[in-house]
Length: 287
Image (tube, rainbow, N blue to C red):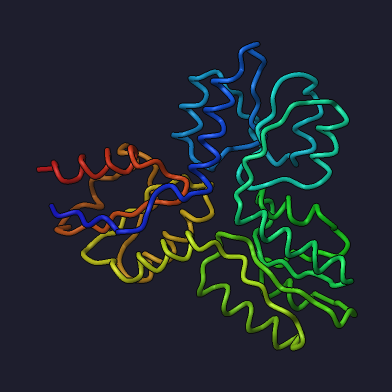
């Protein structure tokens, strides 16, 4: 069986930076204080399990906001995930005098800076993103009254902004083709809006690489089911050939491989290379 690995895949720089900061925090924690991660660091169970083995406590969301996760924590070191958090979370951390390590992706910080600059100039902000996603939560929390989360066409239809000064921007991991259609609809409704693209270059490069390189009979995307960019890659792959999102060798079903001679293999920005490589080795050694 031939397996084609897509050229652009695996950890992006923001994810690498976040993980490096966590390892640095563990190493420098001489007083053995409890280390908590406020939600999944990078939406990958494989990475979460490794951090669990090192004694790091990941606070699972279970539908909770980041501020709710902090309610029962009064001591220790708090890791803020690469998705970023709202200003209210920072305020609570400082009020509780809790040490925290901010691993927010620099690309998300850039988008937040743009949003803040437009809010200062009395703009409303239309944010194309996903509901209950930690990145959206952090952005909307900047100013819930002036930032409007849009997840679907229905949300656009319901949108009623009287302000003639509108900024449109996006979550970093949105699928480019889906974004373009939504943006066209929004610009039709609010033609004088300013658009600032918030989709991460890393996400775009991974999506474009898959589109340009996908081939064969089957596509496997290595990533967690809760990973936004992994799901977007799976949606892209399914437009061309049968595509499945997997997070381990155990997820691969034998019936998928019947009659398959060539597999396209890619992975999400939150997927470690060692996991993808182990799946690659498994596939090429199948009888």
